[in-house]
Image 1 (cartoon, helix red, strand yellow):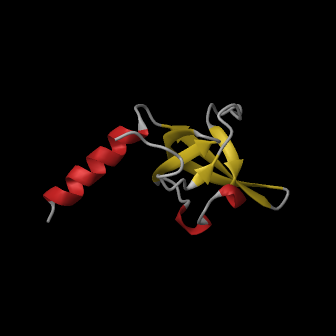
Image 2 (cartoon, helix red, strand yellow; image 1 turned 30 degrees about the vertical axis):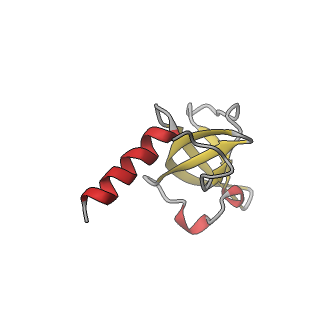
Image 3 (tube, one colour; image 1 turned 60 degrees about the vertical axis):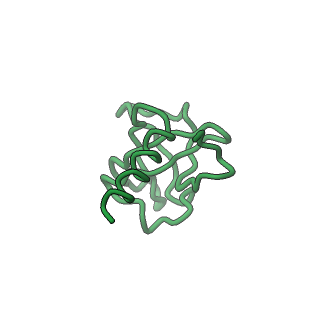
Length: 93
């Protein structure tokens, strides 16, 4: 299986070049497909255009009344995480 932005639900749009002094990516909470799931510790699919990755939400922070998100890009391919989740789901039934 190869992850493709057309077939994988992207939860958060990011710019992979937007790294601040913390060393993490940052993006606007408003760039989330469903902002209610963006919580510290959540692991989800992130994308910069067609480029996909897995990310872990580090924290949320406010600047001038707008909420932003720090994201840690996780190692490995999105496919690996999807395959693992599929195997886990099938094994638990």
